[in-house]
Amino acid sequence: DQQVKQNSPSLSVQEGRISILNCDYTNSMFDYFLWYKKYPAEGPTFLISISSIKDKNEDGRFTVFLNKSAKHLSLHIVPSQPGDSAVYFCAASALRGAQKLVFGQGTRLTINP
Amino acid sequence: DAGITQSPRHKVTETGTPVTLRCHQTENHRYMYWYRQDPGHGLRLIHYSYGVKDTDKGEVSDGYSVSRSKTEDFLLTLESATSSQTSVYFCAISGLKERGTDTQYFGPGTRLTVL
Figure (spheres, rainbow over the protein chains, first blue to last red):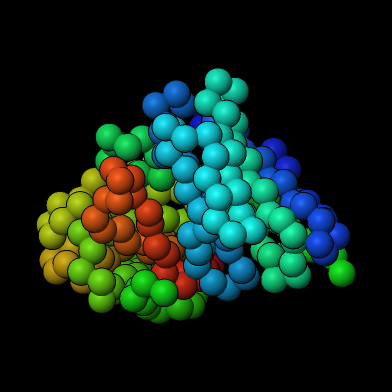
């Protein structure tokens, strides 16, 4: 039972354009969401997060949008740069839970020159 | 980068042998976690710790045990390794909640191959 789903295993975007990565969840108890970026042979790196009291959070080129009614979140990267090529994981947790994150399967983003 | 190290970074072992992976942190964070990463599954929580000698099971805990005798060290043990435990293992830590939320920071990973 995949509670967090990233339905696109891969995404290819031209440098300078917008990258949009999507994530869906099924558990209505989730109220905190994170995006991690992962390069090969390294651990995941925290990118940006959002709590359920917000519908948007922005940090530089990265913006996360949360649609609670649709149980959907997305990560926008503008403009996309070659260094953004990596695997991106979304993750979710319940604030009052036991600090346990549930991850999606990941989306491999490739930025083409 | 958060001060998290994992050892060994790579290990090849045979089915049936015991294996212990170590996670060491220098951040004095309360919470520590072990995840495994497999293709098509993302990262899945194995066990976590919310303090010294306080641990609990995660999503895929069968075949694994953990121990935390000091704040800085969290050990993951495979009592009798099986080929299905071939994976990349990540340790993570988290500390004080920020605005009631929790961000986990990950170590570099250990690639384990069970033959």
